[in-house]
Image (cartoon, rainbow, N blue to C red; front, side, top):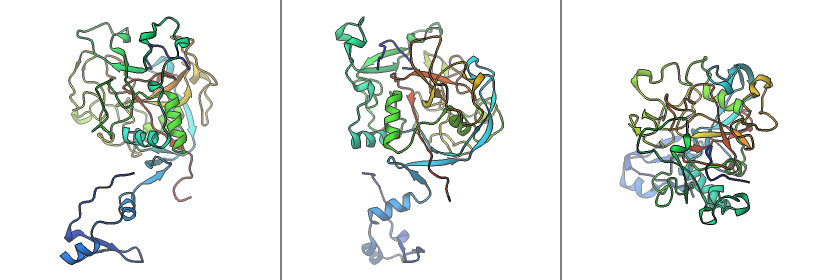
Length: 368
């Protein structure tokens, strides 16, 4: 798979604090009984077994797949897909989608680390580059890496996005900003620098798949009536930011008004009506569909899965897939793709430090 140096699109740990006056035991009928407040009880029962602790901590969630990620069941339905505000997202058209499970939040560094530990998988950003794929690039420049947002020192024309992106040798999911950076202490942030193939590999390991574009939008809308944003018609309802997007003058002055200059840990903002987190902002999310700007004119009405191939008139030779949701770099000056129904796109072997994913599953609905 070719990559272009100047591209863009680019053991469970359970901690338990035991208290004598809150010790618990469970009888044979699964009835929880509060134990007596005594030293004897504390010594007798101590810290719960690993099995009991895990069962207790996961009792309120539905876990599907090898990644043990909490998922939400999205009932099927019909909605108006797309946006009249963007050339590649119209016409707005009615689409019916069957029910499916979706990850509660974006795949995190901790989840991806478990996948790598279990499989030995190496992401595209970590793999050596083949000189045959880059005939016009000096050999000493052919270093594994990925695209990192690098704000310029002064305001620039927003027509050329390469002015704030830099290909950084050594940048990958383990080192989001390049050598010297780390995911230590950032385990609950979305994993980034994920190419399409990387997301597919994780999904296969987890027994899941990537969402179709229609599934993603149905989930993001949360069953709400059509609105400017997925959360409503106001960018800052009640004067508060409800998604991790860029505040300030893009790309030179990020005020971090919402408390996050870059990525935010998953679940830092309130979920939508379906219980899904960060469907807007934080990181772009891969969808399974090939990208074509004209697809909506002929999209099937039921369970559309995208066109048979990709085409982007801006880069006719590149194979691209749809990305959704925008990222922490989107704002009103540049890339308003957090607007409901809007679309993104990415070359399939490219990653960046604002690109991640989440998975879906076709398992039967709860109670079936």
